[in-house]
Length: 162
Image: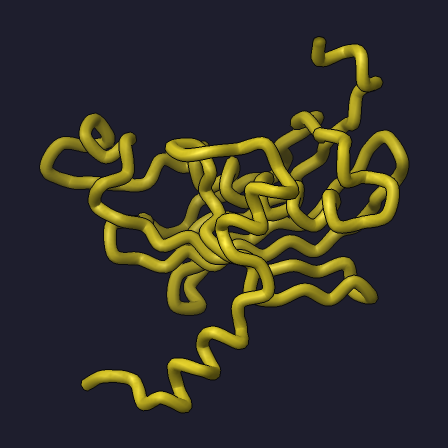
Protein backbone atom coordinates (compact mmCIF):
# COMPACT_ATOMS: atom_id res chain seq x y z
CA UNK A 1 0.00 0.00 0.00
CA UNK A 2 1.44 3.38 -0.95
CA UNK A 3 1.43 6.53 1.13
CA UNK A 4 -1.28 9.08 0.48
CA UNK A 5 -0.08 12.57 -0.55
CA UNK A 6 -0.91 13.81 2.96
CA UNK A 7 1.21 11.10 4.57
CA UNK A 8 4.14 11.84 2.26
CA UNK A 9 3.92 15.56 3.06
CA UNK A 10 3.80 14.74 6.78
CA UNK A 11 6.90 12.54 6.46
CA UNK A 12 8.77 15.26 4.57
CA UNK A 13 7.87 17.93 7.11
CA UNK A 14 9.32 15.73 9.86
CA UNK A 15 12.83 16.05 8.36
CA UNK A 16 14.56 18.93 10.13
CA UNK A 17 17.96 18.39 8.50
CA UNK A 18 18.75 16.44 5.34
CA UNK A 19 22.00 14.63 4.62
CA UNK A 20 23.28 17.66 2.72
CA UNK A 21 22.51 19.93 5.67
CA UNK A 22 24.17 17.49 8.09
CA UNK A 23 27.29 17.58 5.89
CA UNK A 24 27.41 21.36 6.37
CA UNK A 25 27.63 20.83 10.14
CA UNK A 26 30.01 17.88 10.62
CA UNK A 27 33.04 16.73 8.59
CA UNK A 28 31.95 13.10 8.06
CA UNK A 29 31.30 11.96 4.49
CA UNK A 30 30.34 8.78 2.68
CA UNK A 31 31.11 6.03 3.42
CA UNK A 32 31.52 7.11 7.06
CA UNK A 33 28.57 9.49 7.44
CA UNK A 34 26.14 7.40 9.50
CA UNK A 35 23.25 9.84 10.02
CA UNK A 36 20.86 10.27 7.09
CA UNK A 37 18.62 12.93 8.59
CA UNK A 38 17.61 14.72 11.76
CA UNK A 39 13.91 14.39 12.52
CA UNK A 40 13.51 15.91 15.98
CA UNK A 41 15.28 18.42 18.20
CA UNK A 42 14.37 20.03 21.51
CA UNK A 43 17.03 22.46 22.70
CA UNK A 44 15.27 23.05 26.03
CA UNK A 45 15.63 19.33 26.85
CA UNK A 46 19.01 19.03 25.12
CA UNK A 47 17.53 16.36 22.86
CA UNK A 48 18.04 15.37 19.22
CA UNK A 49 16.90 12.39 17.17
CA UNK A 50 18.40 11.32 13.88
CA UNK A 51 17.82 8.36 11.62
CA UNK A 52 19.98 5.95 9.65
CA UNK A 53 18.46 3.70 7.00
CA UNK A 54 20.57 0.56 7.21
CA UNK A 55 21.01 -0.82 3.69
CA UNK A 56 22.50 -4.05 2.36
CA UNK A 57 25.10 -2.01 0.46
CA UNK A 58 26.82 -0.69 3.63
CA UNK A 59 30.56 -1.23 3.20
CA UNK A 60 31.00 -3.20 6.43
CA UNK A 61 28.42 -5.91 5.67
CA UNK A 62 30.73 -7.70 3.22
CA UNK A 63 32.86 -8.89 6.11
CA UNK A 64 30.51 -8.53 9.11
CA UNK A 65 29.35 -11.22 8.59
CA UNK A 66 29.19 -13.04 5.22
CA UNK A 67 25.75 -14.64 5.00
CA UNK A 68 24.56 -12.93 8.21
CA UNK A 69 24.94 -9.14 7.86
CA UNK A 70 25.04 -7.43 11.27
CA UNK A 71 25.77 -3.73 11.81
CA UNK A 72 28.86 -3.62 14.05
CA UNK A 73 28.25 -2.20 17.51
CA UNK A 74 31.06 0.30 17.05
CA UNK A 75 29.25 1.66 13.98
CA UNK A 76 26.07 2.09 16.04
CA UNK A 77 28.06 4.02 18.65
CA UNK A 78 29.66 6.14 15.90
CA UNK A 79 26.21 6.92 14.43
CA UNK A 80 25.11 8.09 17.88
CA UNK A 81 28.27 10.20 18.25
CA UNK A 82 27.66 11.83 14.85
CA UNK A 83 24.10 12.65 15.92
CA UNK A 84 25.51 14.28 19.06
CA UNK A 85 28.00 16.19 16.89
CA UNK A 86 25.12 17.62 14.85
CA UNK A 87 23.42 18.79 18.05
CA UNK A 88 26.60 20.42 19.33
CA UNK A 89 27.38 22.05 15.97
CA UNK A 90 23.97 23.77 16.06
CA UNK A 91 24.73 25.43 19.41
CA UNK A 92 26.08 28.97 19.43
CA UNK A 93 29.87 29.10 19.38
CA UNK A 94 30.43 25.48 18.30
CA UNK A 95 29.79 25.50 14.54
CA UNK A 96 33.44 25.49 13.42
CA UNK A 97 34.79 23.19 16.15
CA UNK A 98 35.01 19.40 16.13
CA UNK A 99 34.64 17.11 19.10
CA UNK A 100 36.60 13.91 19.68
CA UNK A 101 35.61 10.92 21.82
CA UNK A 102 36.64 11.25 25.45
CA UNK A 103 34.63 8.33 26.76
CA UNK A 104 32.24 5.57 25.79
CA UNK A 105 30.73 4.33 29.05
CA UNK A 106 28.15 1.78 30.12
CA UNK A 107 27.40 0.79 26.52
CA UNK A 108 25.15 -2.22 26.09
CA UNK A 109 24.00 -3.92 22.90
CA UNK A 110 20.55 -5.46 23.11
CA UNK A 111 19.38 -6.10 19.56
CA UNK A 112 20.97 -7.05 16.25
CA UNK A 113 20.75 -4.36 13.55
CA UNK A 114 20.51 -5.66 9.98
CA UNK A 115 19.87 -4.41 6.45
CA UNK A 116 16.36 -3.03 6.10
CA UNK A 117 16.27 -1.63 9.64
CA UNK A 118 15.74 2.08 10.28
CA UNK A 119 17.98 3.02 13.19
CA UNK A 120 16.62 5.78 15.41
CA UNK A 121 19.49 7.71 17.03
CA UNK A 122 18.58 9.61 20.19
CA UNK A 123 20.81 11.84 22.28
CA UNK A 124 19.92 13.66 25.48
CA UNK A 125 22.74 15.96 26.54
CA UNK A 126 23.69 15.81 30.22
CA UNK A 127 26.47 18.39 30.01
CA UNK A 128 27.69 20.78 27.36
CA UNK A 129 30.58 23.08 28.17
CA UNK A 130 32.97 25.04 25.97
CA UNK A 131 35.54 22.21 25.84
CA UNK A 132 33.65 19.03 26.70
CA UNK A 133 30.26 17.42 26.89
CA UNK A 134 28.43 14.18 27.48
CA UNK A 135 25.09 12.73 26.60
CA UNK A 136 22.91 9.70 27.09
CA UNK A 137 22.65 7.85 23.77
CA UNK A 138 20.11 5.29 22.55
CA UNK A 139 19.89 3.59 19.16
CA UNK A 140 16.68 1.66 18.52
CA UNK A 141 14.75 -0.10 15.78
CA UNK A 142 10.96 0.04 15.85
CA UNK A 143 11.07 1.15 19.49
CA UNK A 144 13.32 -1.75 20.55
CA UNK A 145 16.68 -0.67 22.02
CA UNK A 146 19.66 -1.88 19.99
CA UNK A 147 22.41 0.05 21.77
CA UNK A 148 22.59 2.50 24.66
CA UNK A 149 25.25 4.20 26.72
CA UNK A 150 26.90 7.43 27.83
CA UNK A 151 29.10 9.22 25.28
CA UNK A 152 31.60 11.95 26.21
CA UNK A 153 33.65 14.21 24.00
CA UNK A 154 36.31 16.87 24.22
CA UNK A 155 36.87 19.81 21.91
CA UNK A 156 40.62 20.23 21.52
CA UNK A 157 42.27 23.57 20.75
CA UNK A 158 42.03 24.48 17.05
CA UNK A 159 45.75 23.86 16.43
CA UNK A 160 45.67 20.34 17.95
CA UNK A 161 44.20 18.81 14.78
CA UNK A 162 46.68 20.30 12.32
